[in-house]
Length: 204
Length: 204
Image 1 (cartoon, one colour):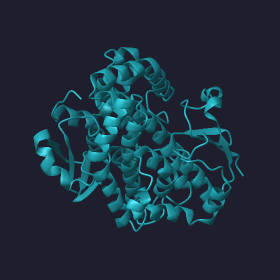
Image 2 (cartoon, helix red, strand yellow; image 1 turned 90 degrees about the vertical axis):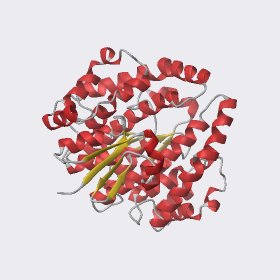
Image 3 (spheres, helix red, strand yellow; image 1 turned 180 degrees about the vertical axis):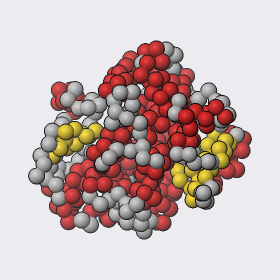
């Protein structure tokens, strides 16, 4: 069994999709959660000075979406052909677009600008993007792509609470029940459920 | 022979890698460059209301990186296994991170915030990130990954002029000669050069 370590903050955010994929794969892993105040001493050890980083037998893998795709490919969650693999890539790229829009607001340090940006996004960007995402999931029978469970579902489920915080929409899954379908599809797996029952709980 | 069309603005930016890849693959395509004033009418017919979009025999493919990866796979510009493909995905994601930081300045409408962001990027982000990118390209013998030509090189080459523009580092070519050299490596491939010689010109 390869020695597998996942380095990330004590958060779900961009790391959880990887933890969920590792759980799904049945791979034991060390869930190494690095507190923000300790991060400084680890930073230079990481390929891009960032986390999450997946380490398998000493080899480091960085960049959260690339890691999720890699684990997806390893575990039969990356589509059966080039077209399906593309569809997952496409829809995840769109999902990340939404995340990036929300993050642009969330990480704005100037309070006035932050408020203006949020109002602008809420009025002009989020409704169309979330509606589109909802349509995609419905077209894909409760999944992100290819009408079935793929690594895209794991990216969605893992970052969902983070998205809700950044979007400031605590009842997002009530507004779009299809979103809950994707999350349920991921947690339907017994190994994923076992991991999530035992893991440290964080708000996002 | 499939009927292939590329829909994008009159720019290189995020659409050019697709054009360059199709040229490399010897695939004839209709290079549809949409003027800004014509875009609103076309927008609803695009899968995500955005461009670039690749259309093959009527089927639309959206999201620039997903499309580039798809064409990369079609034309053998990939690794030999999942491990190698991961490396391509990893560097692309990192390159995109830098681009997003720069784009965030570009899209900032508040003049004070814009100046502040640029200053912060120049002080805290660009030096480290660009140095890292330069190291990776140098380590990979003038390529983005795997020490050889992959679809990642096409993404870089296509985006490079927009990238420079967004960074607002006028001497980028001099500071990091590996960047321009990589772009030239792609653009000097005979089929790619033939396309570029005939294509409409745009600054970025």
